[in-house]
Image (tube, rainbow, N blue to C red; front, side, top):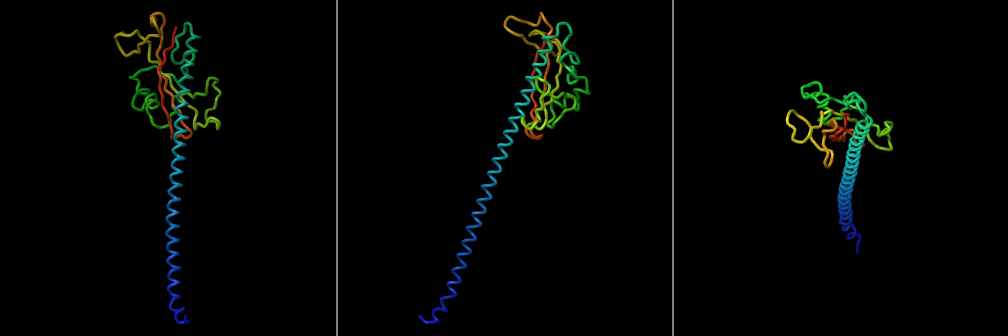
Length: 215
């Protein structure tokens, strides 16, 4: 082989090394795209898991609040022998309201009760804070993981009537086999509880009705 032949083949070798570099860069770009996509899916799954946990915490907190306030009403009714268990007396406090649809301040479109029951935002106006059966539990502490302590209101819907009773709005029901409301005055209460999850953007609103003996 002469020196002239070697010189003629040199440019081809240089050209081949350039093609290898381009191929390597393309593969590197593809691997980068795959890596970014995988990390994005991992982040999305992490956020979904966090949202599910937050929703579960909010559900549990709202349910706990309902059961706790029902216990408060029941225990107050047991201790009450003559005084009606009405709003502002006994087991009930400033978070209890007598049902009155004509009271715009409470039941109007922007009323305190209406906003508490229907707002999609975190509302505490007119509500009481639920802090457990001992009234000393901080559910917003790190160990429980809630963004806020649950809050609730109670509405006195009036006296429970026998099924089939005619007249204005009322709640009807029986307390068990062979029993009726004839022997005792029972008021129906609607309990509305609000709770957050691990962040304030997760809000749960739950309601229950509960009958408590007045006398």
